[in-house]
Image (cartoon, rainbow, N blue to C red):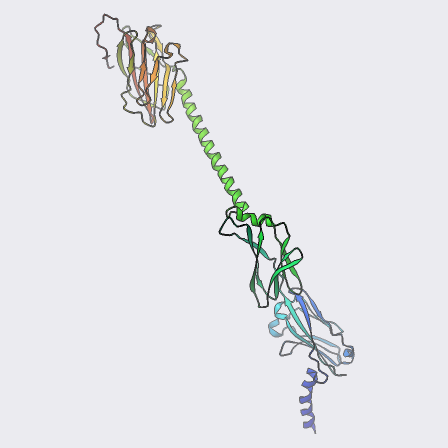
Length: 424
């Protein structure tokens, strides 16, 4: 008889646990957002009469919580299934089960079973855990042809499941696409006119929540009309262009200021004096005020001319080089035995700049002509006031060559040769 009783218990107890008698397959679905809490309510009037209240999870009915009313003992088995329920289960005296900080691995079938007292079918819950939704992203797909009058847009969401992605025009649904698989990406295109004034939005939603991204046609669609450059890129190009222009202007100003300063240094009346002997010759002792320039030996050439003639004082240069500077100075020896040199003409090859001094020195007005190729100086229609010493200074890369021409008067009856040279 005892053996028959044991077989009875082994056969009928699983049936009682699974609720065969009066069993119903009704399952209550509960949707919850990942990270939130959910409570599964017992809501059974017979719970006060039950000896054992048991909560199980999953297809294998793994025990996770129970109440033994005979000894008034509450038990939580949160270390089962690799501890996925650890510190997440709470059981109150009514038998309701609360799961906190829920995760997707806790989604599934939960059953409440009452053992002892009046037998009732188990209560079943299916928890659906939805991941938190990202905000959809709207990008512009610029057409290959810049003449297109429409703007191509693409709304996207990545790593989503059990969601629907939709385009809305105002409150009207234009198009939608759904996903039920885990962790996939969704994209939904839209074509609008550049001048469209309607309100558009892209919505990503699941049964619990939604995320909305509104479309700014002015910002996104005008990007295509700017030949593929964004507003930020266009601004960056403009700033770079302005910076380059400012740098070039600064370099030009610096170069002009430097050349002007050099010209001013040359324009200043030379404080160099020469001692004249009774025969009109000059001493070969010179004092150079430009200490940074190495001066070669001076050479003096005598140039006798008659009144009314023209004479050219040569530089002996075939063509002035890029870094060479020509400077002509004049000193009148008739006033006193100590003559003072003054600048009468300069030529800068670097910028092809000529500085004649005809207007400053009245005696040379309309009488001087400077050859831009060789730097030679021509004095036309010579009068007694033009007689004197003409000093040529050729400066190039830290060296200065000096050549002095002594232009003297020749009477009409003189048979002196046109040019006489004497080296000192």
